[in-house]
Length: 247
Image (cartoon, rainbow, N blue to C red; front, side, top):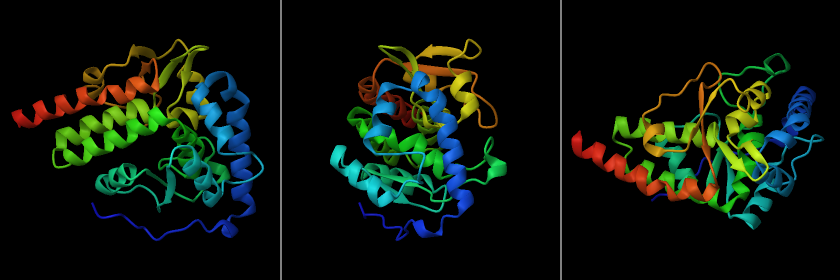
């Protein structure tokens, strides 16, 4: 495979006073509640990579930590990228992340993921070896079935209900690990409340469950370990192979 090179960098000196204020406000708001809500792996990860309220993460520093822990790194992108480029990056252990931050007026709602979602939400979990293994193997499978519209949708659903909106049964109880929840003040509390449905992690059920983009999810799937995620991927590949045979 050709190694992707976006030739982009984080222009750290260009962050404004408002950018730094936004980071601090979002960081403080989430860290007031996440210690009792987030997965142990996430909390250990955010400490290991050195994210603090005082400063926007510098990707060069973040990458040094990640490389030492799991061999992953952050790849700067402008925003959302096509599926092929996205999964090729993950396959080579590079996580795409933007460098722009939402404005003060957008603290509670944003249509497109910004740097806070990409870094605060996703990057701490890249310190977990089983979770990283899941991302890498999922990407291999995704690239194999990229020409199948149905297959891509099934993969997107699995990614959505795990990487973005997954819950885990930690020894301390039900916790959050999905970045879409982690980076959302309201959904962090809502997802663990009695309002939404909680279902056991099951690949076949997930790939047949449409997801919701414009409001909180109605159902969350609960894993028992990050190893379970990785070990579920042969089931996904078999489902996709059967789908391809029927097409």
